Image (tube, rainbow, N blue to C red; front, side, top):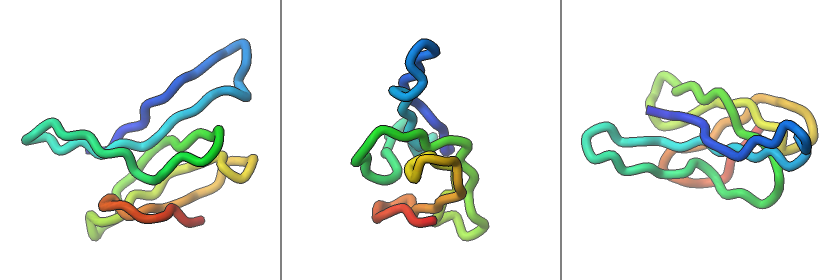
Length: 78
């Protein structure tokens, strides 16, 4: 399962942050997808058909765009 989790501040939305997490249902182990190097929001994860990548929207460039990342690590890309 892939979910988003983060910190949301209605009074200061510029401080909002969220990340994508993959949770293994059998063990409950949670792994964050990608590395955070700034303040942005990664949201609305969706699995690719091969089960190895997740596509999501991210505000890391200043506007929401589609990004993808391998679930086993690696750098996210537009």
